[in-house]
Image: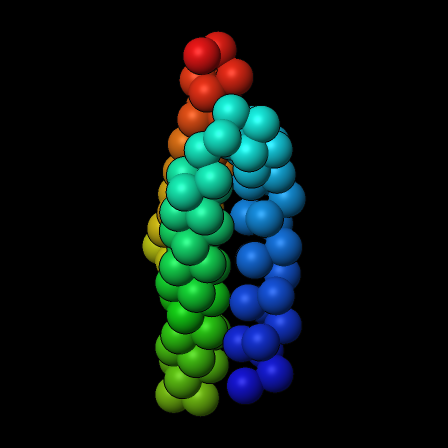
Length: 101
C-alpha cells in the first residue's frame, strides 16, 4: 500500500508539473472548465499508471517466487510511458493552441 501511495504521489506530481502551462493559459483565456477537465484526466492517468506499476511489480515478484530467473515486465513500462507521455504531449499542445487564440 505504501508503494502504491508513493508512486501515485510521484505520478500525480509529474503530470501536474506538465499541466501547469495549460492551466495558466486556460485561466488567462477564461477556459477554466478546460483546465479542470485536464486536471481530472491527469488524476485518472496517474491512478491508471500507478495501478499498472504496482500490478507489474507484483507479477514480477510472483515470477521470482516461482523460481524463474528471467522475470521482467517491460510491456508495463512501455504502456506507462505511452500513457503519461501521451497526456503530457496533449496538454502541452493544447496549451500552445489556446495561447495562439
